[in-house]
Each structure stands twice: as structure tokens, then as C-alpha cells.
Amino acid sequence: MALVRPRLTDYYGISQAQAELDFAIPFLDEDVPLYVDPFLLWKSPSQQDQALHTSLVNSFNRQNWLLQKGREDEAAQNLVLASECDEVGLGLSRTRKGKRIGAGTAQDILALFRHIPEYGRFGFTHFEEIQLYVDGISKDRISDFTCNFLKSFLIDFTIDQCQALGIPVSTVRLASLYDYRSYSFQHNLEVTLPVYPERGTPIIFVPKRWLRHVPWLNFDDYFASYCPKDEVVHRQGSDERVSVLAYNRDNYGVVEAYVQAKERVAEDCKTDPLFKQIPVLSARRKLNEIRGLSTGIGDSADKKYEKAASELLASLLYPHLDFADVQSRTAGGTTIRDLVFYNNRSVDFLQEILDDYRSRQLVMELKNVRSIEREHINQLNRYLTNEFGAFGVLVTRHPLPRAMFRNTIELWAGQRRCIIALTDADLELMVGVYESKQRSPIEVLKRSYIEFRRACPS
Amino acid sequence: MKRADVDVFEKLTVQLDGLYQELSILAKKTPNDAINGFKLSFINDILAQCNSLFGEKYRPFAGFETFSAEELPSNSDATFILSQYIECAEKFRADHIQNEGIQGWSWQIDDKGPRISTSRPKKLSPKD
Image 1 (cartoon, helix red, strand yellow):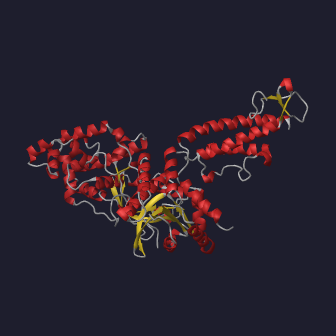
Image 2 (cartoon, one colour; image 1 turned 90 degrees about the vertical axis):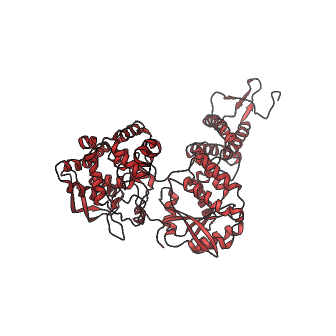
Image 3 (cartoon, rainbow over the protein chains, first blue to last red; image 1 turned 180 degrees about the vertical axis):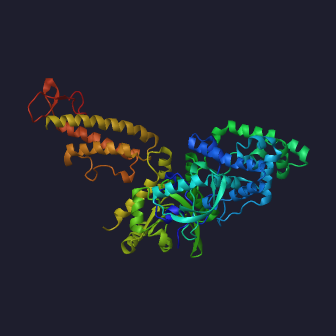
């Protein structure tokens, strides 16, 4: 069994938590569900980000220059090449192999320079406006255009991060790389980058301060709040997406007003975090929900318990433990839900968990039962293999009965396996310190572990 | 009892009282909330000095020395222990002071020097 939802850093045994790193840690099997928003570069207080935005927009507007010079094919080809950036691993793809835009879409984009005089003469300030004119262009394309035009910077950034963290790099060939000096794509270049372990394809890191779920300027926001729908229906016959896009092409002023309005509230444009903790008030509410649930499966109490406990623990243990996934498995005819966390070793005892029990990921089994029985412990014990090492947590309602606690001690004595329990009382203390900020909730887990170890024979 | 020990005792009792008052306020609001590591380190420091001064005889509990940070003691745990130390400090004082009649109460000092006045033991009423 391999790591659950493996990340690059975990693969190479690097212990930093996501919160401590400047880039979004790439997953090995799937994409990070966020996108680069060029508006974040524009509004950034950093001169470096602002300069990168300028070079990005310059690179995009360069296609207009090519158009004016009669080199339309070259401009279209540039847009096609810039429209997909697999190396950054952003988006929703599980296959990590995206498709470029077609020649028709590239022509539609270039047509904006011809048909809208403002763009033809002055170029774009926010090139993500193309979402408002061209069908088939959305947040993923904007992100890919940005990454491709800034790829040279991102490669340097990636190499810096790899050197700082000790991530191994290899010499790989990139199919294309944008050269800002010549405003053109270079082909088949050799660069030094980290690679996906099994496929050997290159990885490029992206600063997490540039990431959002949707760009600040986007079609849905425009359509919901700024688009004069009556006018669109009057002119185009309907307010469907394609009609709105056609309307925008003929009414640049409406788009310009939208962009100016969004620029005025640019302070509200914030980076989306890779993981968002639930608010303190919600944590208390979830705890009360858990405490109000009966044990067992009646009235779907087990499902409700699993849902509330998952949300609560993922938030409480962040940023010391990055939440990986909820896993379901079947044992003895019952479905068991586990929470899996990456072992970031950000707290001293987590290093001990790795050293002594070889746990690269921590598994927590959720058990909404009145009393833990031998079979429950055995189920978790059987699951503790490979990457999970020999350490597991039973998240349950009440403390282990004396006989079951002795059972876990015997497991440690006989097989050096450590199974500890987190009860409702522990969750209450975790929520308490989450509210008061006097201690960290992970210390409650540490306390349970230390109490267990003290009970073990020396 | 040495003159220097009286100094240490007086400082420690003032600090014990201060800690107790601070933590009582927290314990009334959130009795089960854990004390943070910063506060706990100073509480433990005071308790360790008290243990050293009091010795086995005056320590409140034979099985307790200081709080373990890993056990996440709560505000009410701390006020409970501090109140016991305050009581034992008074017992310690009562056993090391003497009534000098018209001059009032003073510490029993081994080394020579001026007397150090103190108040009467708390368990005695003003008439005693």
C-alpha cells in the first residue's frame, strides 16, 4: 500500500507542513484544485510580482504586435503553445494531461485586437478579460497562459525551493519555454527540475500567494453582478453565455466599467488558502453536535459523527498535521471511515511516531460506539501496515474500557504497535484550546500518546 | 531559619498570591482550558522554589512536584494546587515565627542581626 493522496514532499521524506512552505505542494496523482490569478500579481505590494505582471501582459500584448506586422500565424501559434501548462499541476485534472486550445479559439482571441479598438491600440491591462469575449476560455486557461509566460521565473523559483528543501532535481527536456527577451517560445530545452517519481515528467512549483479558486475577474461574477442582461437580451435575443460574449465584443465600455469596478475593490481580492480551517464558532457547534449524538448507527448517528469529527479534526490539527483524505474500507461487513493525515513531523512527538513506528501518514479510525471492543482494536491493528506504520488513533466517544486499554498495552509490548484513543472529552479540550489559543490542539493528541507510553512496560 | 530564607519566602508567597489571583480569574471563566506553556513555565519555577524551601515536611502533596506541560493542566488544576501551596506556606511561616510580646511577632532567625517582624499566624484571632 502506498501513501494516501501522496504529495511530492512526502515522497521525498521532507517534513515541512504546507503552511510553512511558499509554494503549493504538488500531489503525485492529481492536480491542486486552485488556479493562478494574474490579478493577484497586479495588486501585490511586491515590486517583483508587479513587474512579473507587466512582463506577462507585455508578452500577451506582443501577439497584437505580431498581428500588426502580418505575422498572424506566429501569434496564433504562440497562443496555442501558451494555453496549457501541465508541469504546474493546477486544476481539477486527475490525469494531469491537459489539452491546448485549438487554432479557432486562438483566432478568436487575436480577433479581439482587431475588432476592439482599445485593445488594438493600447493592449490589455488585465488579459483575463478575454474570458468575457471568447467562448472556451475560463479560469484554467488564464492560469495556464500566466504560467507559460512566466515559466522561466517559475523554474528559477522551483530550483530555489528544491535547493532549500533538498528535493532532488533532474535534467529534463521541456517541449517549450517562453523567452521574454525574444518574445517567442524556445523548443526542446534542457532544464533542471524535480520530476514526478514514476513518470519522470517535470514539476514546476507555483507560489501559493498567487492562487485562487476563481480569478478575480471572471465571467460568472460579471454575469451575476455587472452584465446589463436586459440590454443583452434586447440586442442578442437571449442572455445565454455566447450571447453575452457577443454583446461584450460590441460594448467594450461595459467590460471596461466592470474591470474598473473590480480594480476599485482590489483590496478584497485575497489568496485562497489550500486548506481553510473552520471558524472557532463552527468548531464549538460541531463539538456540540457530536456530544448530542447517540452512539451506534440509529438515526444515522454514525454518519453524522463521522462527518462532524472529520471536519473538526482536520481543522483542529492544522497546521501541525496536513489533512490528506477520508478513506473508507470494509471490515467484517461494516464500513469503516478513517481520517488520514500527512505526518509533517512539525511537533517533536510526531518525529518519534515516524522513528519508532515508521508512520509516514497518521490514520485515525472513527468509531461512534458506546464501548470499544477487542474487534475494533484488531480492525485498526490489521490496517496498520506500510505507510501507516504501527501507530493508529481510535476516535471514539468514551475512554477505552480497562480491559481494552490493557489490550492496547499488550499490543505494544508484543508487537510494538501503538493504538491510542481520542474521546469526546479530548475533543472538548481540543476545541477549548482552539478557542482560547492557550495551547495547540495537537498537544492533546500528544498527551494521549504520552499517557499511553507511561502505561507501557519499560 | 536563615535570614536569606525569609527573603526568599516573602518573595515566593507574594508571587504565589499573585499567580493564584490571576489564575482564579481565568479559572472562573474557563476552568477546563489548558494553561499555555509560557505561564506554566513560571508557575513551575515558583513551585520548584517552594518545594526547595519547604522540604518534604511542608510540601502539600508528596506525589506532586511541578506540573507536566505535556499533561495540559487546566486553569482549575493550577488554582487548586496554588491554593494548597499558599496554605502550606502559611503553615511553614507559623512554625517559624515567634511572639515577642509587646514587640509583636518576628521570625526565628539563626544568624545574628536585627529582628524581622511579621504578622501573627492567620489561624490565630487578634485576641490570641
